Image 1: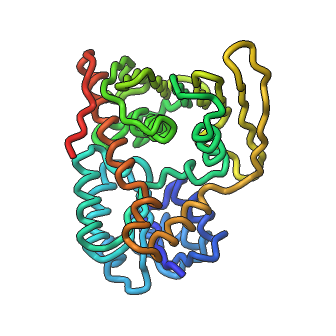
Image 2 (image 1 turned 30 degrees about the horizontal axis):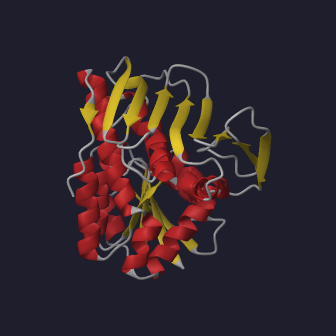
Length: 335
């Protein structure tokens, strides 16, 4: 059984912690937060016996094998590096870090220390995602030509960390990372160029961003993310011989069936619906993580998708550059 400390006491920390309690592979031993009262409140809900308001205390706790980091984005990399130095396995809330250079530093440190580090891109552990990937891999819609992702919700609280640039705020980091990850998993390719446009909000963060990504072959990805309107979420994959549409690809309800819409055929194809049973992707995520800790280092790379995490960070870096430069930017993979 893997013994965990939750680093952070916000909404997502609570959601992941509650999911952890549903897994037989997990024991939550501690909760850390800057505010001790917040740590106490979450620890009480999760049944964690210890509370910390100093990170060094977590690193020295011999009954903690792994930590889940749910802090503002700019703290992901430095806190992960401290955890790795203490010999702890690390699950980091998405995005793993604010730049590709930080992601690479975290992954190198993990490799040298022999611990598992994984980005908490939870949606990839839902059976809906596996079903979509299987349909594409089987050629049900032919060669992929377009991937379209739309994700947004209203965020107008200027004091929220998502609205503060200095702590890694903005729609691209918060929800654009999902679209970049999804496109890479569907195309099995890295874009070579990105064009972008968008709007910067009250604190200078991107509150609306569109990225158009080009590839070496006949394929494009379009990702639209926004803090400026009501909640919406959708992904569409268009192949040479058909199309797939997912109404809620990322924040899937754990207690409801989800439906994949499929069209096979290039002209006026009949819609098919594939019903996916309910599943809690947060539970599956911690169980995959626990399995990664238990297996050989070569198997860990497949489970944690280390190379995909780093590539995604490079793509997001280029997307940021394109939005703020107003030019087409190259996506440069240098390893």
